[in-house]
Amino acid sequence: MKFGIPKEILEGESRVAIVPKLIRQFKKEGDEIYIEKGAGEGSFFSDADYEKAGAKIFDDVKKLYEQSDVILKVQPPENQEIEMLKEDSIFIGFMAPTVRKEQTKMFADRKVTSFAMEFVPRISRAQSMDALSSMASIAGYRAVLIGAQHLCKFFPLLMTAAGTIPPAKVLILGAGVAGLQAIATARRLGANVEAFDTRPVVREQVESLGAVFVEMEVVEDAETKGGYAKEMSEAFIKKEMEIIGKHLEKSDICITTAQIFGKKAPILIKEDMVARMKPGSVIIDIAAEQGGNCELTEAGKIVEKYGVKVVGAKNLPATLPVDASQMYSKNIITLLNHLFSSDNFDFEDEITQKSCITHNGEVVNDFVKKTLEENS
Image 1 (cartoon, rainbow, N blue to C red):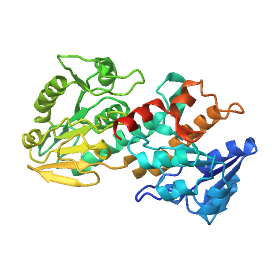
Image 2: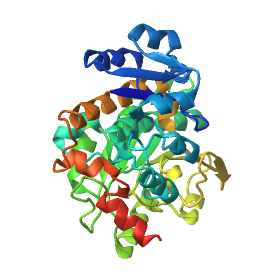
Image 3: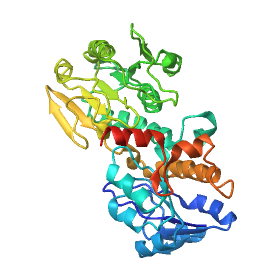
């Protein structure tokens, strides 16, 4: 088959779908790899690196699309990119199909078989394909470093001739992949860390990383069968905010990571809660691109109010493009090996079925269909 990797066109996106060292895996199967000129530059992979690995460099992206059977990308494609896809070709990458209604319809109209990396189910045999978790781990790490940069005090305990400086207090909201990595990073920097999550089952993981687990007195089932967080009742959210507010007032930094799959992120921090925080405190909102967990969050911006900085963190994995591209490449290669393990796609298989969004001219993913119908 002929695989095409175009350069990402989203401003600030520095990742590339496939890194040079993994090109050899395609060549073993006799496949052809086409790379748009400069596609790897943002991740510090040169065209020469790709050519040495056996890829063909294309100056004209239209020709790359015309000659490729499969297009591999990181970011969801824009209209002009979808229009270049051949009819009956295959697309694999992030898609955000529930919020990009027009683009999802375009995929179906062009009879493109599309697979969304964020829809790979969170089951044990799909762990090596789970790009959401890979990128979330990077985001959690990076969020803490950004917080340390903006905080007006040290992270670790320091005992100096000028006196003892207490460690920073960090509150992590959400103990998923991003939250756990944030906990680990903040602890490495010497902070005292508390972590809040609606799922009691994560307590052991939080405490194993050296953080204090903040419990809720009222418990609801907070997780879907697929391993994603789900929307909670109003009464639950009200109680949740009360608990968060008490701990927020004592914190120097808060990292928010709460997201609901396919939907807007839940508001966990109201403006009045920010007003009660200590002057000089910082909120790093990883969920900014999904609407944010803080009422004051603006994606890609730093909002300063009540003496508190609210950082609307945007596309954090792209700020560490070398490792992010390596990890994403491994995820996508593993998914490809699974999808093409037989002559035809096995839609009875859970991984194939749930990650496929469009096929044969229609939206075939049940979750996406239902969400689009509800929002139409």
